[in-house]
Image (cartoon, rainbow, N blue to C red):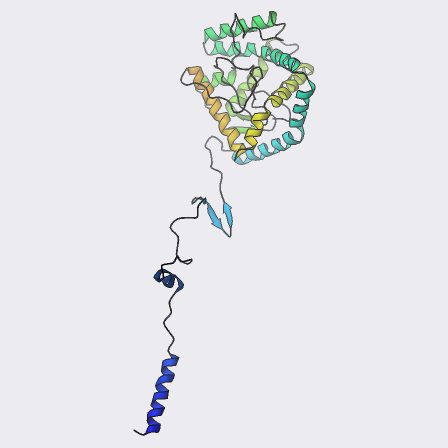
Length: 321
């Protein structure tokens, strides 16, 4: 072979070698070979603070509200709740706080006691319907003492020595629950607040007893509207701490709903003597009427509690509900 031919063969072989592409090594394999973490390698564990049950996409975390079998009207109730809170923040809350500042505490306490005393016949009647004769007698005694020695209920003499007759909540909604009537769907109504079908029906009956049995002045709107307004303003003013605590919770609507349903069940259980009633959320003065379902949030105190502030069953209210 001539020198020229040999040189030509070598040049052709070099050209073929240069045309062959080098082997490809992916970044993940190279990183693993070097003992470094790979950005492309899948991670077994999500980043800290990430809920694995949350759906993520394009940096947006989507979470869904857990459904509650007792709240089939969730979507409607949530919208009602939001509307009520808007009105409460803009109007009702400030007016209630203004009422608290303008009216001296002894006067507010006296009005509260009078309105509480007017609820005692309803409590008495429902204890009779539940065949709790001892508590019905105590309620009658409390009403008699406060209506006479307490100047029409202005002073709560009955809860003090030597009587020791505390106020207890009761109503037709309690009686229905006591005899096993289910709550029905949970409702959050603009003029009432948190309630259920059972409790709503029970409250209508409660509100009808005195007007039907006694008549004047209970069936007169000129009496019913001012007294209801004063009671609701006082309740809203005294419940400010509870309202703020609920608003600070992760899900105020669910907090109100769960507290209400749990509290009502605890009250019915207490009537049967099965469990001790749950404590209401928030701090309320001893002589204050606890937050009622007619308010923006709502809770009730145990009907069989050994001592409580005067409170009636949930009442129909104004726009603060």
